[in-house]
Structures are given as structure tokens and as C-alpha cells.
Amino acid sequence: MIHIDQRTYSIQDGNCVIVLTPSGRLDITTAWQFRLKLQECISKLTHHVVVNLGQVNFIDSSGLTSLVAGMRDADKVKGSFRICNVHPEAKLVFEVTMMDTVFEIFETEEEALEGVPRSLTPQN
Image (cartoon, rainbow, N blue to C red; front, side):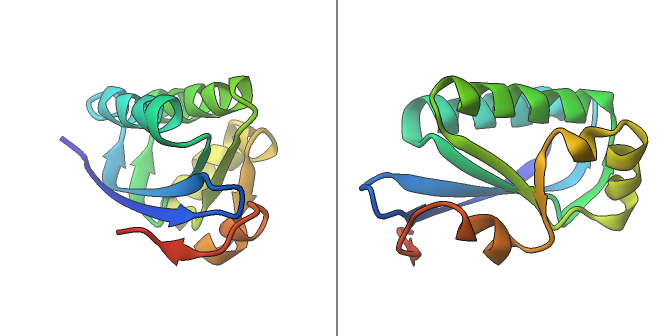
């Protein structure tokens, strides 16, 4: 079981951006649950997602696959998918697999939110 914090911000076009912050391990035992959460957010709530990985201290290929799937889902609906605040332990996995060149990765959540047209007002 993985805990996923979810915050929603409204953006200028009337839509919203969701920031998901999973915590713990994003591996074969939890990746499917995270994948479902991403799918639900992108298909039902918004086309714009930021994933804050500051609380994820371990990620494996299953975790990376769930992120790639989320990015593809967002691309299909002309949305945005960004990653921020990658935990130092997980950053190595992104670099070794060259996934750091695949994703839009930002140092901070604020930087990741900057590119999404919005007025940052939390909705919850």
C-alpha cells in the first residue's frame, strides 16, 4: 500500500492541475496502485498532473513504467505531465535508465507548476 497525497490547484482556463505526492517505495508492489491513481486523475479530473517524488526513496522499473504510462495518458489528451523534487535515492535510477531525458523534471514543485497556465489557488 502506498500513501498518495493529492492537492488540486485551479488554472486560468477553468481546468485544474493536480499535484500527487506519493510516499515510500514506488515498486512492483505499489506501482499498479499509483498507476490507477494517475489514470483516474488524468481521465476524470484534469489533463495536468505534477508528481512530487520528494517522499519516494526507492523506485524500480515498475515505478518508472507507471510514470511513463501517466505521461502517455496526459499526452493523449494534450495535457501536461511533470515530475519534481526527485528524492536523491531515486534520482540515480532516473539517470542510469536515462529517464531523466524522457520526463520534464523540475527541482521544486513551484517550478513544475510555473509552466502550467494558472492562477494558483488551492481548491481543497
